[in-house]
Image (cartoon, rainbow, N blue to C red; front, top):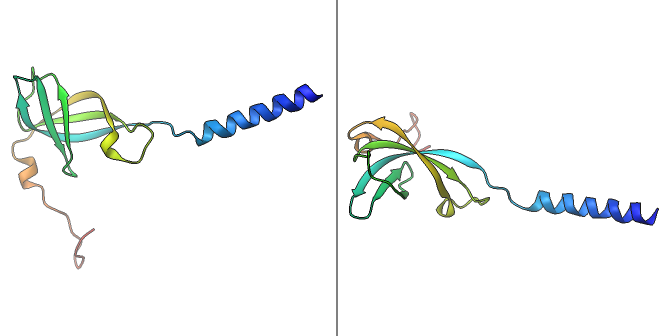
Length: 111
């Protein structure tokens, strides 16, 4: 009987601790290629929030390519510590960031 109680308490504590440990999630992040460094084999991208991201492998990338970054949030809410897991080509659209304007609702100053 005592062993069953100890086992039950141990399982309960383990489940509680596992629910408190943050788990990482993956998500897609749309970016545009802003710079390519062939010397360093590094591609720099910018997302819609203005964050810059870099990955290696310049072979087929061009400035203004749309790159979808497959990201890991590392189990935190802070985006600055997120990690690029993979990169997918999303197309090419010249000047898409320059033409992007903040959307406002009629009668509203901002969203």
